[in-house]
Image (cartoon, rainbow, N blue to C red; front, side, top):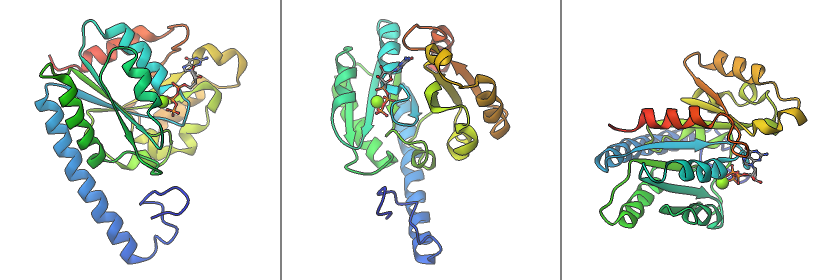
Length: 236
Ligand SMILES: Nc1nc2c(ncn2[C@@H]2O[C@H](COP(=O)(O)OP(=O)(O)OP(=O)(O)O)[C@@H](O)[C@H]2O)c(=O)[nH]1
Ligand SMILES: [Mg+2]
């Protein structure tokens, strides 16, 4: 285990064959549980989205606005991942939607076994009502979460304009693993040198079939396309 970030995969002695073996079996176990989670979610009648980004890119804010827009027509549940605190789950519950807070106690990403536990709690909260759409907000981190399938149906990576448009090129594994890249906080474009064109070009260079949307949770610009994306992925 890595001393600095607690992550199993970024051990500074990865050349040690025993460590490589442990990492491999850890990932295999994670993959098995992720596949079971996907079945579990489908059995619940739902689809799930894994949201990944740096800390503060706007994941929870996007969820708050999305819940406001869809709450009356779509049954939403949220699993929140953070190192500490219940704050994000509290923000979601304030919008009238069930939320489970998973606190990793130091680990820099969620893994499939943690999400499995979260699904059972979410089911309990549903009181038989079920869900159409389950959001899993990962721990704010643009590196470690990329490696761990959680059992989601779509992976959305957020990139906010203050972070800089060079991020897809610098964190390729995360962007490559995405289905959709959401460029957020577009209301701040006049104040930063972020180039939507560069971020788009670099993302598509990594993965030509990536979908890319831009939006601002503050002004609502670009929100219709995001809501259409969500509606299109719902199980009919
Ligand atoms: N200007 C602007 N600010 C935004 C927007 N979306 C979110 N913010 C602000 O960005 C800050 C961080 O937002 P959060 O939604 O908490 O970010 P997060 O990705 O959930 O953060 P972590 O869970 O800590 O990783 C807050 O102060 C939000 O108000 C946006 O579209 N425009
Ligand atoms: Mg958050």
